[in-house]
Structure formats: structure tokens, C-alpha cells
Length: 409
Image 1 (spheres, rainbow, N blue to C red):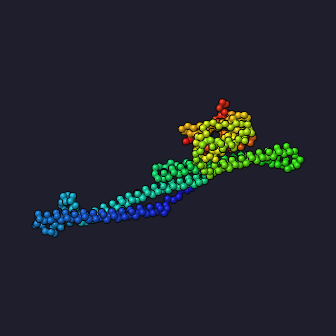
Image 2: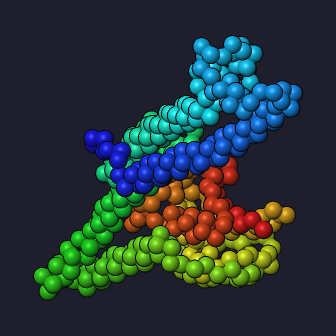
Image 3: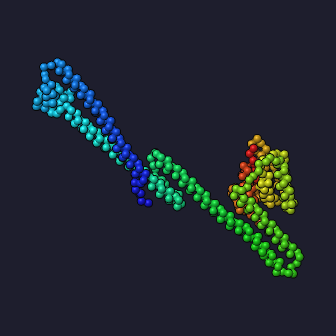
């Protein structure tokens, strides 16, 4: 963008004001100086009058005309030039004319000096305004490029001053916009990936249900055992779809920030009762024992419903990955810093790489079941962290796999 002219309405007002101030300054200076010179002239005349009076008293025989001829004598007629010169009675002109000449010279010289000084000040102001306009044009062009999404620009360093402060603030805004743009890009990619994963998660069971329904509708003479098996599979697939949709809705509510968590204190045993009752049938089907350890009266503070959602996902995951006849242990511990609730199972051990990604949405580890969606653990972590807690995983050959929820007191 080309540089715009420095002259504008504000510049015109400023320079016009400076010209007016300069004119008023010169006028005032001339008035003050003229008054001062007039006062000096009167004092000088009084001095000459005193000297003249003293001279007449000393030399009463000299007539007035002779004294005037002496004071108004020309250079050739005045023999005492060297003596009278230092007192202002110079040769060549009358005393009154001498003072007028000196006044004119002094006024002319001082006015020229003031005009030169004023012109220099105005020139400096104009040059400063020109540099200021150039800097503002650069900042304007910079912000226009930023508005077009060019966040990798660097601003030319500026000297100290108010424009430098403005430049620094603009740079901060640019960095913030760049970070927000990058965050928005990542969020869009995550949303795109999530939609793709959701589509994949829903497509498989829906396709299976569609095929099973087609077989049921086309095979009128299907035996009862096969029909019941198909209907059971359809029910299982639809239950999985229902759970997936419910989990996704919960995640979307958390992401949108519309969930308001309650802050109430309740015994930990109440939370464990709610979770074990809901998962008791699943544990019986897989022949897994749910065991509770620790003081059930330990108080937890938070939202009982959402804590139940988080813990249910952890316990459900532990049941699904436990061999038959094993135990899933729910342990409660308390110390002066936090309350912890740990879910332990003796299933397959997670390697360190899996532990890094286990809480990512739609992540399915190598030991994930056929119906796993990779949402449950992500939802649990989201719920725990939104209530100021921490959810971690630790897995090893001797200690098994432990998911631990910790809430600071």
C-alpha cells in the first residue's frame, strides 16, 4: 500500500495553531520590547536632562543655543566624540534619532530570529508528523494483512514512544489471533475426525441390523432358534447404538459447556452402590466379582450423577477386560490432601504407548472388544477433570491395571 500524504485535517489544525501562536508570540514580543525600549529612552532622556542641567549650573555663561548646537553637532563639528561616545552621545546624528535607529535594528533582528526559530519548530513538527504518519500507515497495512489471515508477519522495531506501545499491543493481539486460529483449525480437524469416527461406529451396527432384518423378512420359514438368535443380535446392536448415542450426547454437552456440576458432599458408599447396582448384571454375565474396599463413609464433594457416569465407565471397562472368575476391586483411600477411588482389574496389561492414548476419544487399544467405541474412558476423564479431579492409569504385570480418580480436598 502506498504511503498516504501527511497533510490532513488534524495536521492542518495543528500547523495552523502553531502559526497563530508564532504570530501572537511575535506581536507580544514586539509590544513588550517596544514598551521596554520606550522606558529606556525616557530614562536616557532624563539622564541627559540631568547632565545638561548640571552643565548649565557649572557653566552659566553658555547660552542655550550653544548647548543645543553642541548636542546636535555632526561628526566634523564635535571634538569630544571619543569622550561622549560611550555615553550615547555619538557623532553624526541627533541623540533622539540614534535611539530610534537602534530600536529599529533591535526589533528587526529579534523578529527575524523569532521567525527563524518558529520556522524551525514548525519544520520539526512537520517532520515528526510525517514519521508518525508513516508508522501509522505501516501499522494499518500490517493489521489489514492480519485481517486476511497472515499471522506470520513481523513488525519493524520502533523507538520508545506511544506508537511503540501501540505496536506492542498489536503484536500481542496478532499472537492471540494466531493461537486462536490454530486452535480453531485443530478443533475443526478434531470435529471432522470425530464425525468420521462416529459415522464409522454407527455404520457397522446399523449395517448388521439391516442385514439381520432383511434375513428375517425374507426367510419366512426360518427356524425358531435362528430367529431368536437374530433377534438377540439385533437387540444387542441397537443397545450398543443407544449407548453410543447417549455417550456422544453427554460428551457434546460437556464440550459445549452447558453442564452445570453440583457441589454437594455425599458418602463414597452411595456412589459405589449406584454403580455396582447398574453393572451387577454385566458382572454376573461375565462371571466377574465386584469387590469394595476401604471406608465407605469417606465424603466426596461433587456431582453424584456425573461421578457415577465416570465411575460406571471405568468399572464397565474393567469388567469387560477381566477374565472369568477374576475380581474388579473398587478401593477408597483418604489422606490430608485428596480422596482417591481406584478401579483395579487383572486383565491384559497395557503397554506404555497404550497408556498414553487410552483416554483419547475413539481410541481402541489392541485388546479392545468387538463392540468397543473408545468413548467411555474419554468421557470419564472429561467428567473427572471438569470437577477439579485427576484420572490416571497404571498397568503392570504384578499390580494389574489400575484407574485412579483423585479429588483434592
